[in-house]
Image (cartoon, rainbow, N blue to C red):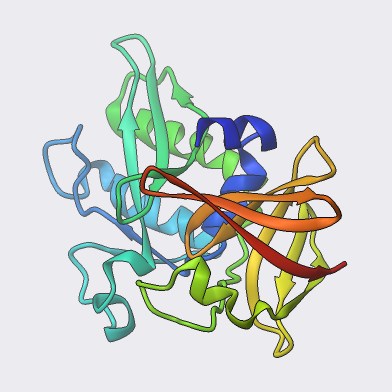
Length: 229
C-alpha cells in the first residue's frame, strides 16, 4: 500500500478510492476531547465535509436505511490532535470500515490560546487540503454488486472493457457503460494502479496483453483483461 502511494503521489490514489463513497460518518465526540461536540468541533467537521460535497451524518444521528444496512458503504471521519502546549495541530483522517486511512489532511495549525478559537482555526486550516482531493461521488458499478464480489466475477467471460479517459488515467467500462475498473497512471506507461471493489492491484502490459495482478491472502493472482483503449 505504501508503494502505491509513493508511485502516485498519494492524492490521486486517495481521490480514486474516496470517490467511491457517498457518505461520511463523523463521531459525536472526538477522542482528544472530553464532551460530545465540545467547542462545536464535531458539528464544524460535519459542516466542512458537506462544503466539499460529502453527505455527512454524526454517529448519533438517525441514519437512512441505505446507510444503516451497510457499515462498509461509508467513510469514517476522525480528527487527531498532534499539537503541544505551544501550538494546536489537528489532522483529519478519512477511514474505511476496516480502519484503513484512505486520506489524511495536512496539519491544521493555530497558536491561539483560547481552545475554542484554536480548534476552530486549526480544523479550518486542515480542511484546506481537501481542495486537492476534488471529491466527486462516482461509484464503481460492478456486475456482482455484493460485498463478496471478486475480480474473477468482475471479469467473467473475458468480456471486452473500453477505456474512458479521466484526469489521472481511465475508467474501464463494459458494453453497458458500467465502470468495472478505475486505473491510474504511474511513471511507467505499461503499468497502472487498478482500483476495484475498494481494493487495489496493478494493471500491467506484458507481451501486448493486459493483466490485473493483486494479492488474495498470500497468493499473487494474475488475470488477463481485454481492453480497448
